Image (cartoon, rainbow, N blue to C red):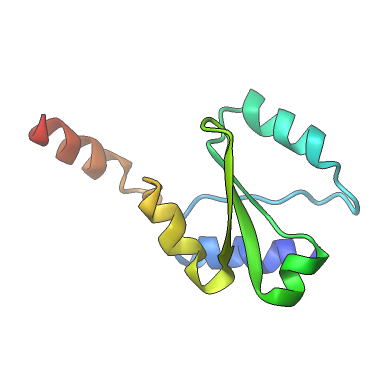
Length: 100
């Protein structure tokens, strides 16, 4: 739980919308199904080994891909995948509309 809270806080500090499971032992299969049902594009996963190494997994749910990144690179990785800070969606749509 502590690692989930830490990663979520990193994303919140970067104004990236994020949430975490508050269950003691969430089952990944059910968490993925829930995220897909809610049309959530990415999941950040950290198990015991990743936490010890200062890493986490970024799972692209639509592309069905996964990569392991350093926690310090998490925000940059998500931004590189098109995640924009909360409140900037309109600006991003405007920018994309102007470049078309």
